[in-house]
Length: 254
Image: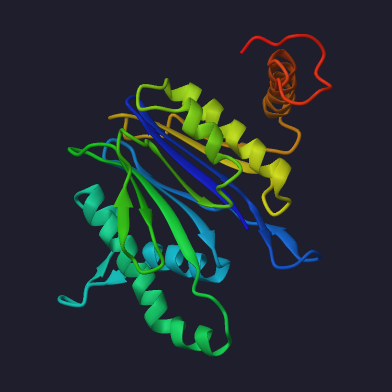
C-alpha cells in the first residue's frame, strides 16, 4: 500500500509520496515512489506511483530508457516531449507497453496489473499541469474546482484536503495541508509510512524549489503531528455535546 498526493494551486505544484512497500506483515521495505526529471530552464516533471511495485518500476524504467514510437521505431523520452500533454501520453503508452509485455503472464499467475500514477510539472512555453494516469494508460487532469489528486490509500487524507485546500491556497500552506493528510493516513494504515518525499515546484520556475526527504525523526513533521492531534482534541472539546438523550446536563443551545 502507499499514499501519494498532488496539489496544484495558483502559485505552483506540491507532490508528496510515502516510501513504504508491503508484501506481507514480515516483508516491509522502503522504495522511492516520487521520481523527478528536471532540466533547468526547460522542464521539471515528476511521477508519483502506487500499486504493484514491479509494474510501476517497469514503467518508470521504460520511460528512462525510452518508449518506442510504433510509427517511426524511434525511442521517445520524457525529456524530448514538447508539452505536458504529450508527456502524459508517453507515460500512458509506457503503461500499455508494460501490459503488452507482462500482462498475460501476470494474469496467468493471478497477479493484478495494478498501477496508478500522478504526473505533474511544466515544460517551457506551457502551463503547469497535473494528471492522474490509470492502469489502462488513459488519464484525467486536475481542475481549479478540485485542485488535487490522490492515489493509493487515499480515504483517510481526503476529508482534510476537501475542507482545507482550494486553488487560491498558498503554495506552502498546500504543502502543510498535504503533510497533515499524510499524517492522518499513516496513523490509520500501517501500510503507509516514512520516509516521505516532497516536491514543491513554483509556477514558471522550471526548477524544483524544494526536493526534500522527510525522515522518521524530522523535527518539523513530528511537531506538525502533535499540533494536529492537539488541535483535533481541542476542537471536539469545544463543540457542545449533542442535545439528545436524558443524560446531557443542562440546556444546550444549538
